[in-house]
Length: 244
Ligand code: HEM
Ligand code: HEM
View 1 (tube, rainbow, N blue to C red):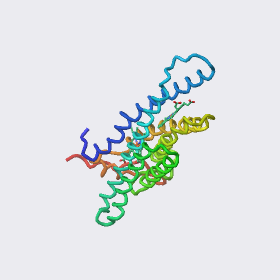
View 2: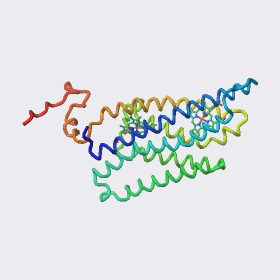
View 3: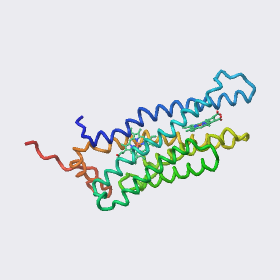
View 4: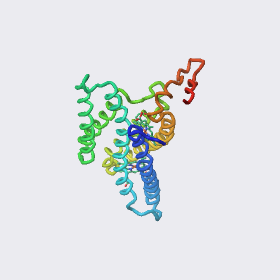
């Protein structure tokens, strides 16, 4: 298919999600399962065939996964945000707003970098909160297709919550290890089982959205179709002009 530069930019996000993020999720999940199996086997005083380093490896790849999911989230929202800025010529009309958005990107990425380095409980809390606020506020900028009236099937809301859960996982790594009563461990498992469902949802809603978005050179024609559910001619398109 003939792709314009705009279409290639659009494909960057799904391509990276499919080739990098989802394989990583598979590996992190496999090691999560093994970590749990091994811990329960050892607790029951049984011998385990699973190597003892599997928990560490889960965390090592988990740390990569947090960055990858936040990164792919940013990639997903950045294209529509900047397309909107360009379309409405906001750089000359509202330069403060554009500056604010750019600074927010910088601050959010910096907070995530500091979260990776933070050891102290207070600082982990501070940087996780700052990263979370940045992720939410940037997601609610104009141009992002949120599907607010159908949030339960929205690629945006699933992605937002999944990204926040990954940031939270990164923030509580030390607590999981330090808590002898395993409350943080259980919280982590419950929340991330939910995150898995959201990732499954991202695979489904993302491919659905790809099916909906036409290549740039077809847009002017496709968007003449009737998308109004209340109209009797819903889901019909005007006939193409006969070829010359
Ligand atoms: C889809 C994502 C994830 C799932 C489903 C998941 C699930 C799990 C499960 C089932 C365990 C074992 C719990 C047990 O022993 O009963 C575990 C352990 C752990 N997870 Fe995750 N996790 C995910 C992502 C992450 C991420 C992103 C991080 C951190 C950046 C992380 C950090 C940890 C830590 C520190 C442990 C304890 C490891 C050990 O005992 O050595 N996890 N996780
Ligand atoms: C961890 C996985 C993923 C996350 C966190 C994520 C997150 C996001 C976010 C936040 C947006 C912007 C909101 C929107 O336009 O709906 C977005 C857009 C999009 N995503 Fe994903 N996504 C993920 C996986 C996927 C996958 C697997 C596909 C397809 C195979 C996909 C396809 C798309 C498409 C087509 C858009 C619209 C882009 C645009 O308008 O420029 N995403 N994604």
